[in-house]
Amino acid sequence: MQFDATRAQHDRACKVIPGGVNSGVRSTAYPLPHHYTHAQGARIYDVDGHEFIDYSLGQGPMFLGHTPECVIKAVQRQVERGIVLAGQSEDEIVAAELLVKHIACAEKVRFTTTGSEAVHAALRLARSATGRDKVLRFEGHYHGWLDTIAWNHAARDTELGPPEDPILRPSSLGQSTSDGAGLVVRPWNDEAILRQTFEAHGDSLAAVICDPFAAAAGLIPAEQSFLELLRALCDAHGVVLIFDEVITGLRVARGGAQEYYGVTPDLATLAKALGAGMPVGALVGRAKLMDRFVETGTVHSGTYNANPMVMAGTRAALELLLEDDGSEFKKAWDAGEQLQAGLRTLADQHGLPLQLRGVPTVFSASFVPPDAAPITDMRSAQQTDVALGKRFLIEMLHRNVQLTTFGIWFVSTAHTQQDVDETLAAADASMAALVAEGA
Image 1 (cartoon, helix red, strand yellow):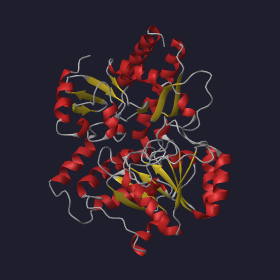
Image 2 (cartoon, helix red, strand yellow):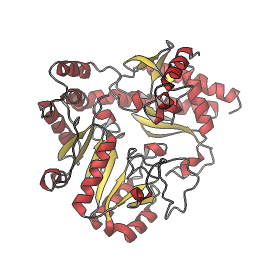
Image 3 (cartoon, one colour):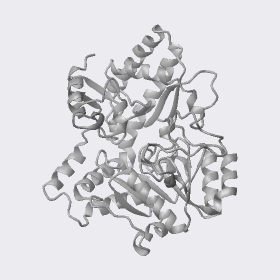
Image 4 (spheres, one colour):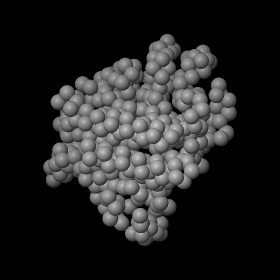
């Protein structure tokens, strides 16, 4: 497979854009940052004329596929009427009503432009409501790139410190050490350490924030009892529980991870699948917390928040995804179930230690030694054979299947039976190639 046009365009981009990319995660793509021309449904096309079945889906947002007709038409209609009006629209009210109807914790909604902004608003709200400063977060969880929360999410970090008190590590150069001063960091899914942490810090915590599926750590779903304990401890100590559902919201279930687990947080952040590709995020939560935005002067602003163009597309996406008893959602779930079952069968046939974690609409596929300990957190996830995973990704790419660089498969409602069949055929050939190369 040739990438001459991609290389030429990347070289051109590097002259005017640092690294040739405008988001750091894109720099890790093979063989170079991808340069696409267009996409349709579950297929995406690059500047070299290659066609790929896409399981990256824009890093998750395109849950309805790349060109959902209802969303495109809604946006087109609104663009002709106005893009940013510094006022309210009916579309944002309808979108909020749909979220309140289907998401357990959502009594009120504030829209943002990104998931990172929603997280920032949630933390500010929690500190405002409790009068406390500390925030408990978990190793390997990603909550956006803002300085006050972007700590300890590097999954392959070698200097972790003891699990009872991990070393506080910023995610980037340029972060001030003072920005992490209010953070308490602990391992995921460890109930004993969680109890100890609340005994020591519970009465000084403003919030606990977690991604219930720990996607950035390799997609490591919470154990049911861990989330239930977390809810109980937050209640006992007056701590605001925040679910970061930027990835899981509307995707692992229509009501998100809180529906999947039956555990309701106080606040939740949404993005990605929320708008089917629109640049939109949301903070949803209990009214007594959300009303602080207007009752106490807790600041949350944004020129582009809930702009009419984005909200028209978001409303259309939510109406399709949440209405009609979930028939649209079921398309993605069914396709993902077939993919998971097929990948497990193929791995067994080829004798490869492939491990799948997650649910049919979003799951990880990684290679873990057969004698490995159970993967329950970021530390145990370091047993993953990253090199073999990358080789598999490359083999799949050369068979016209596009995966994420971090091993997560995003499945859309647009993936067809033909897409599934072709993907499993590519996986069969790719695994055979790995075995032939000595995997």
